[in-house]
Image (cartoon, rainbow, N blue to C red):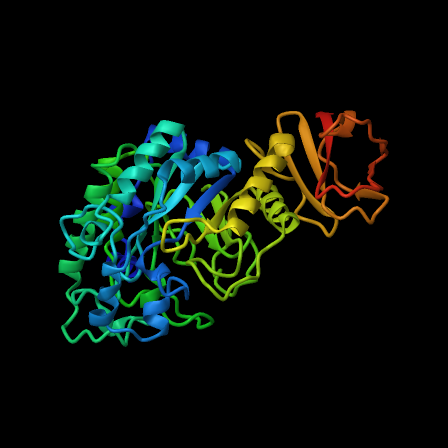
Length: 442
């Protein structure tokens, strides 16, 4: 009876005993380490949903039927798309990887897939966007991750009867998850066979089959059979990391944990029901404006200071920042996004040492700023210079040998004796982040 109960629990979570026994390969562990050191990536939300200019949820939000929404493929012709420019833009912004939408909830595939007619090859554009991005990433030395939606607002075999979204798309058939699962396996096999080495798969949509946010029951209404999905991925490309935006504690077989519009340990967005893992790499994804997909009415752009603060705070919590852009239907990236990414790149030219390859600080983010650290250096990020000094009552190192500004090596005064550690930080300048370096010894 006890074993039966355990099996039932596994099934309720969409897991199996096989998945519980997952042991990452050496190449996977190496990829995790690389990912943790990368700290900064580019998220790209783009597809036919960009055409109405109302974000990527337009099909669901406007209650568009499959029949009517499918017409968008005949208008999707991104003649201004330049894969080399996209990858260079990310690289110049100081980003180390790109996470590309390959298939969102609307079911449109951005590659030459054999398993759906609703794909980029059946548009006026007729070019494999995933291949172009993949080739350019491999050429320029940028790691590529694939976003892939678990749910589909178009397909009849998706278990739409129990789904929370896509209920107005006009589907009349009965869901058949066995059929849908095979469809996903076929597409994932294409993505992991035809486009070179992939850093990871970024799943989304699990939450469609759970109770609404805020309700206690977060168990899935269907068995997703993640043991089969994850097992396939790890078999095809053992190094390929798996993350799932289910807003829950990581499932067995997953290699990194993401937080949507949240820093680990926070729940400002109301989406994060999970605690931060102390074993897996962490990532927080955020937008430059308020929208993921292209939105004509959204002009609420975050400032350069806000974006730097986000990156610094994420790093100080041991997490990456995956910063999103929503290109226009034509493939052009709007100037507001380009300018902010360029500014991030300029900032990282001076301060990248305090972000890349660092680990979480010995204290959580404070009103004045955050802390990152690596090797024998502690980086004090002063994001608010109102205070004349910052003090630590539990400084974890016995000795501070040097203290200086990272930008120009200007010496900084400090006190470190008898349990008191105080660093003087009254900066009268316009710097977004005055980074103080403490060289320390145990």
